Image 1 (cartoon, one colour):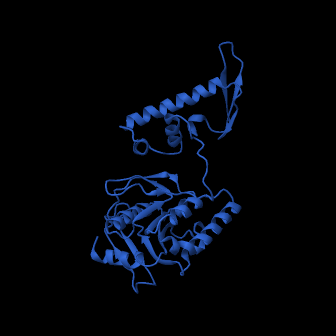
Image 2: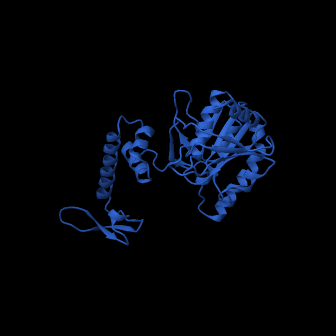
Length: 293
């Protein structure tokens, strides 16, 4: 990147802690750009510690950023040292189970944001362009929000697709700043892990389960074999596939040795029927077939 980009970053991020926003249309590379900023800030020593509510894997130049998906851990991390810290909040992926829960989460942000200067913490919020309903209003309060990065919405065939960003800041610059081409980050991250902020730490429901079952669970929630290979440090994608199959067999064994098991999930009910050769599970289909779900 050019010297102007570095000057802008230093002007914004070496000031007292505040909020900046990364916005843009779907699939414009907002999360990728936030990880590029982490690498860039690390290289120029603008920040010393990094955290995010998405799982980011370590690299040769960066130790693993702190994975934070609840407010209790955010406070502990924020007040844990005097070092300058950067927290990436992938807010566009946030999902609260109810309006009441959403209100509680927003109240927590209202409490935390005024304290970020005491934590020496800067927050970068990633949100969808034009989707104000997804973003707590305090993030755009000019008292705290000092700059916005907007990813250009270009045709995938355009040479600058996902590589162009506009910086605006009424506080620091009179004109918009346009930067391109933005390099692609070399950091690896798991888009399926995290992003949902909770009030308190949640107990891991898979804690104590065999590794193949954990891998199967990640796969069922959308993780690819490439992502599984990285997350669980497997030697090959083929090994990831083998572990998925092994996890499936483990779950089937649990079904067969639990005669009183009743499942009612995703439109599938499973009930035991009598059989002279041993317990069997009869699947009653509701709606779509199992191979169509």
